Length: 125
Image 1 (tube, helix red, strand yellow):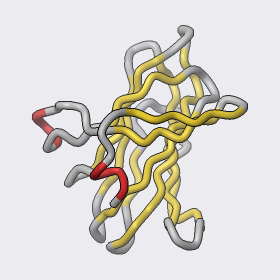
Image 2 (image 1 turned 120 degrees about the vertical axis):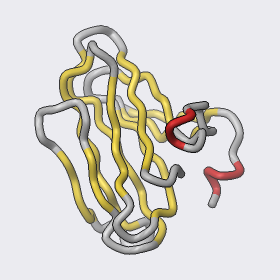
Image 3 (image 1 turned 180 degrees about the vertical axis):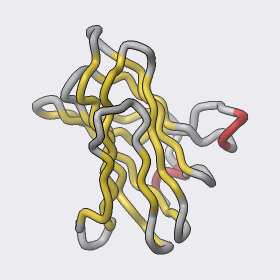
Image 4 (image 1 turned 90 degrees about the vertical axis):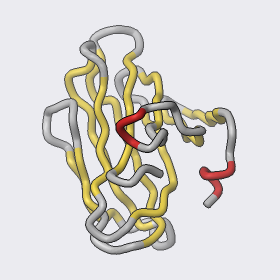
């Protein structure tokens, strides 16, 4: 998969949205695979990943963040598979089958100019 070979960070943004293709950030708890981004309220980070059936994909954010949402799309059909839009800072979705997916993380509420958010999965991506 493209993200597995990409080293560095590329961001393409228009109107508060960004596509983040990033290299893994060191984190011993998740096989060195967490994605870390700095987002303002209303900004989005988008990743591609291959997930196993029943693999959880989750996000979290720093203490200045109150609401973070996550959406899981099929990479080929663009169909929304699952989302977590509860008012919390620890959203989670589960891949229903093995395959390629797109993960969208939305910073809904950040009380400072910018907040840090992390995205990962059970097996890393």
